[in-house]
Length: 383
Image (cartoon, rainbow, N blue to C red; front, side, top):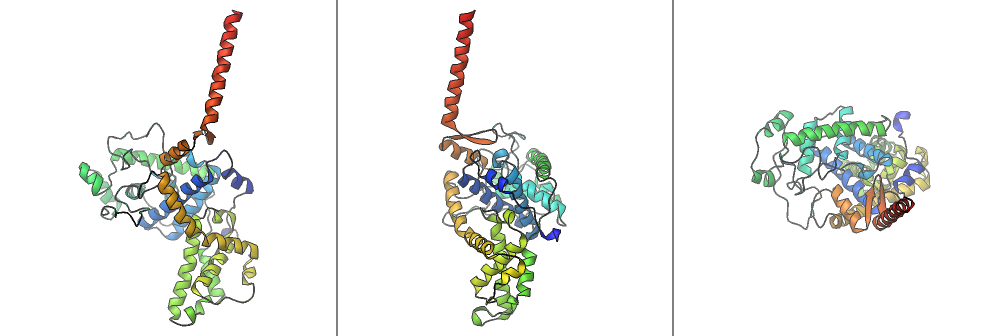
C-alpha cells in the first residue's frame, strides 16, 4: 500500500513555513496561489495529462516546505518592461540577481519522469507566452481583452526555426512573445540547475500518489453512479456531473493555503471530494457514516470539506490582493520584484533567507557604526 500514500509535512515544517522570520502570511499565500495556477496553465498548454501537472503542484508545495520562497524566481525572468527578454538583455542576471524558474523546473522534472516528457525548448516557449502581454493569464474580465494570442506552438523543429530570424520591435510587442537564443540558453541552464536543487531538497523522493483514481473507485463502490440528478433526467448526465465535480474539488485543493495534499493522505482527500460533490449535485448518500469504511474520521472529513469548499472564495480574494501588490496591473504573474516592492512599502527587507524590519536594521547599523567609532577613538587616545 506504500504506493498509495505520500510523505506528509511535519508540524515543525508547517511551523517554519509560517515562522516570524519568513514572509508575511498573505504574501506567502499570493506566491503559492499564483505559482500553482501558472503551473496548471503551463501544463494545459503543454498538453500534459492532469495527473502530471497535479504531481508538479504537489512537488512544488513540498519544495517550498524546505526552501525559502524568495530564494528563486517563482516563474520566468522578465525584463523591466514586462515583456520577454530581448537579445540585448544580459543573459545571466537581471538587476544583479540570478533568477530561477521554480514552476517551470518542477513541471519539467515531473514530465521527464512520466511517460509524457517535454523538451526544455517547449517549456521555455510556453512560459514565455504565459508571462507575455499576449497572454490572458490572470486576465481580469472587467478589463479590455488582451491582444490576439500567437499561433499555437508546434513541435520543437518549428519553434527552433522561429528563433532563427529576429522579429521587428512591433512583432515582439504585439504579435508573438519573443525568446532570443541567448535568453533560451540562459533559461535552459537555470532549468537544469534548479532541477538538481529540487531533487536534492526533496531527498530524490518524487513519489506522488494522487487521490483522483481513488475518488472514482469510491464513487463506483458506493453506487453513486446509479443516481438520477435531481430525481430525474439522464443517468449518464448525472454520472458525468458527479464525477466532474469530484475531480474539480481535487484539482481545486491543489491551490489550498492549508496545503491539503501535504497534510492528508489520498484516501481522505478522495472521500472529502466525493462528499462535497455529492452534496452539490444532489446525489443520495448512504445514511450510515460511510467514510469510516475508508479509514477517515468525521473530524478530518469536516476539515477537508471546509478547506476544499473555501478555496473558490479565497482565490477571488487573492486575485484582488495580487492586483494591489502588482501595482494595478490588470493581468499577469506575480513577480519577485512585486513582492520585494510590497515588503519595502511595509518597511521590511530580505536579509539572507529572512525578512526583517528595515527600521530595526537601520538602528542596528547605527549602533554598530557608533561602536566602531568609539573603538577608533580609544585606539587614538591610547596611542
